[in-house]
Image 1 (cartoon, rainbow, N blue to C red):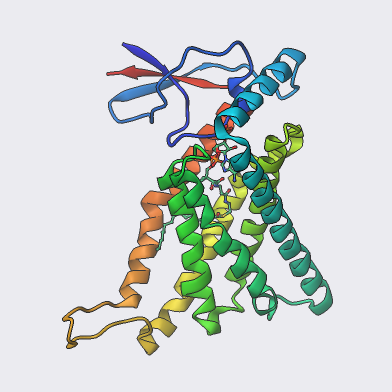
Image 2: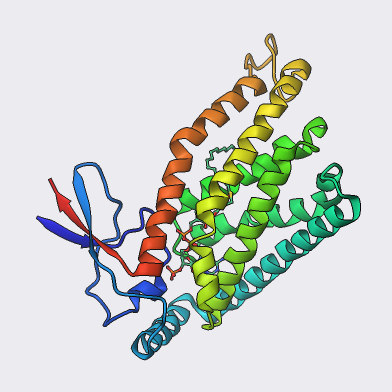
Length: 288
Ligand SMILES: CCCCCCCCCCCCC[C@@H](O)CC(=O)SCCNC(=O)CCNC(=O)[C@H](O)C(C)(C)COP(=O)(O)OP(=O)(O)OC[C@H]1O[C@@H](n2cnc3c(N)ncnc32)[C@H](O)[C@@H]1OP(=O)(O)O
């Protein structure tokens, strides 16, 4: 028995794809699970945004605004503009620093306040999912945001000797380009004026930036290991009155290992989103 479903594993994305034709019959939004075979059913959109598609998009956008309510829409517009601006400020600061100093040494120190502020502010993304004003999966947003918060506060902020590692620049550049694109995508979508280039960039840059960012993060954690082992930071040794022990060194090793199952899931989720949003593909799921 075949079942037609949207491609996203965790919900979200694809307003353009959905509006390419007449409104489809409501379909279950489900992951392609074991025991099902997924095949691409159609490819509708070429990115040129024909008149019918535009009218459909406007209707859908108006529908979304009504469902979300004006307070939530206004808040999200403010939030996305603020975040786009924040990450743009960060990008300009990084370029200026490099042009003036000609080295990456001292870069993290010079931008850390802005980075901490805007990356921590992104915790609100989990709240947005929890209260239902955006349809992103709490799990997907949670993994994405918590791994960033972890990198900012528990690694780079806490372990000063690694702040000048090249790997820090790798993830900073990957995050910054990603976030400028992502938040401007949300902003323009909310304002119903999404340029095709922004949509394309949102669902294309990640192909390179995700692996670059993850490599930067993993290499930075790796560089932190000797320091963490030597100092025993954030670790709790026995004996103590609560009879608990915690070793941050092993926690870091486990965290690094957890990228192996988690990162491909996020990456393939984004690849499916890309096929759906840029090429209008839907997936036919066939139960075995
Ligand atoms: C405590 C220790 C924890 C350690 C964990 C260790 C394991 C970690 C493994 C993974 C590591 C990831 C590392 C990461 O930090 C590396 C990088 O980021 S490198 C740089 C490249 N990164 C990316 O490209 C990030 C890509 N990710 C995303 O885009 C999103 O975060 C994601 C949620 C993953 C997926 O997005 P998706 O396209 O599926 O959905 P959206 O959320 O974009 O959209 C769904 C719909 O919701 C609407 N929406 C969402 N947010 C907003 C908003 N702020 N304002 C308005 N609307 C919003 C969006 O428009 C969609 O609406 P519609 O469906 O109607 O179109």
